[in-house]
Amino acid sequence: MFNKILIANRGEIAIRIMRACRELGIRTVAVYSDADRNAQHVQFADEAMFIGDAAPKESYLNADVLIQAARNSQSDAVHPGYGFLSENASFAAAVESANLTFIGPSADSIRAMGDKVESKILMKKSGVPTVPGYEGLEGYDDFKKAAKKIGYPVLIKAAAGGGGRGMRVVNTESELKEAIELAEREALNAFGDERLLIEKYLAEAHHIEIQVFGDKHGNFVHLFERECSVQRRHQKIIEESPSPLLTPELREQMGQAAVNAARAVGYYNAGTVEFIFDPNLSSFFFLEMNTRLQVEHPVTELVTGLDLVHWQIRIAAGEKFPFTQSELHQHGHAIECRVYAEDPSTGFLPSTGRLLQFIPPHGPGIRVDSGFATGDEVTHFYDPLLAKLIVHAGSREDAIKRMKNALNDFIVHGVVTNIDYMRAVLETDDFKQGKVSTRWAETKFGEWNVPQPDLHALIAAALADVVFVGGRAQSAVSNETDPFNPWKQTGNYRN
Ligand code: ADP
Ligand code: ADP
Ligand code: MG
Image 1 (cartoon, protein in one colour):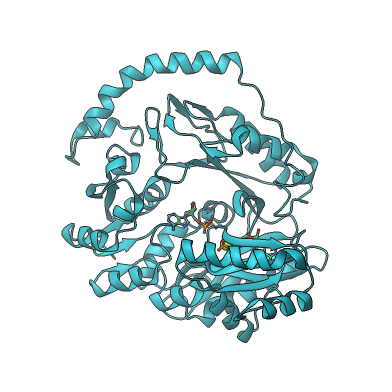
Image 2 (tube, rainbow, N blue to C red; image 1 turned 90 degrees about the horizontal axis):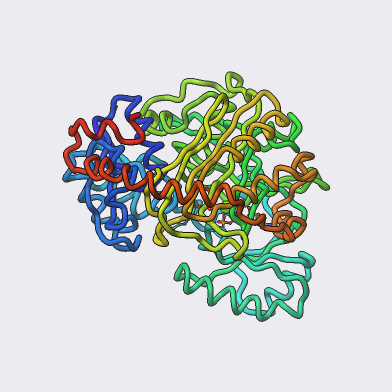
């Protein structure tokens, strides 16, 4: 087993990984940029290394500096978390070349799945169902013919796309030419690669993904599905497991297809195979494989009882996955809400500022993964994810109730959040009946009205401002670099 792991990430996921390390008796090394000197993940780690300026390019995306930090701290492995360099094949290869273990799949697997064109071709060959469409087209005429064969609406995607970027829906032939030109330019700017693919746009579809695990001994299992259809700008906001749509037969078929996809690229470690599911046809199609730990992994942890990060680490260290498929089961129902510092009244623009009060809910069946505490600054440099709120209950109905109460009890002052928005989503009949497709939040639920701030909240925020001044002295002490300073024990995560 490893002695020390460097976590090449920040925020909630860095802390999540450190918790697992601590439970496995492994020392942790945090990295931090200029903007993160006082961040919770730095205080939580056993050691911390400064890696550069606030801009991600200068720090969390700087492979050389990260590898140097891992060497200098005498770490023996690197966990990349999600986002940043987690799906960068060159980074994975460079980590391994530096005689460190990359906690994730091989660079070859990442490369094979990182390209939407290459992976789609590979999946077709491996018998995994894909969305009807075409790859490798050149010139407008080819696209025009392809779109006609597929039938409008069609979706144009960047081969190198990710994070919901570089996609364009085209409803009629008259929009096609301009859409291709814009998509090519956008893809070139964002990813340095203008290749596109075209496929059928499934307007009423659900996003259902399967968590898979492979070990380094050729064994594969899946840990069932997550339904992630509540999305804005193709980004997930609410995820759950089980999916309200799947029958045991479909679950079995999708699980098998996901395992086949992983096997096709000689996959090991945790991965997620994303499918788009058409409830009218009862058919599912491969979208992409995310070759890393996923943001929404906690819902799978709560229904399976497995710690996914433990298993990532143990598999990276060469252990065999000890369970066969038939020994794995889903228990109860789990839902995750991504609490963002975003303002629904301004089209969900990030809301930055100091957290005057940040009091997550607690109680039976409630889990909060966060990288923030009262007094912390939410900056514009990074993803505005404040916390992941995850609940577990015996049934979907009870999980929804539990989540509504937990959202209600979540106190955040100082920045605007999407908490009320998510509560409103959970109140709808469509959500309760599991009828939410990936376009639902932006179309059917588009007219949601932002509630006016209430007086109590404003007064509480003003009071918190006063109380906060007292809290500052303690955080100054606990931010000292000496990891063994006993004052650190009074930090928020140790209490
Ligand atoms: P998921 O399906 O887990 O939401 P995404 O592909 O949408 O995965 O991205 C995961 C997270 O990583 C998101 O929070 C996103 O903001 C972040 N992310 C995606 N791409 C990058 C990148 N190039 N640099 C930094 N963060 C990124
Ligand atoms: P990314 O790499 O940006 O995550 P994906 O291919 O995983 O790209 O797609 C992101 C989201 O876009 C999906 O979750 C789904 O909501 C939507 N989407 C992708 N392909 C289609 C399609 N063919 N039809 C309808 N929606 C799609
Ligand atoms: Mg995706």
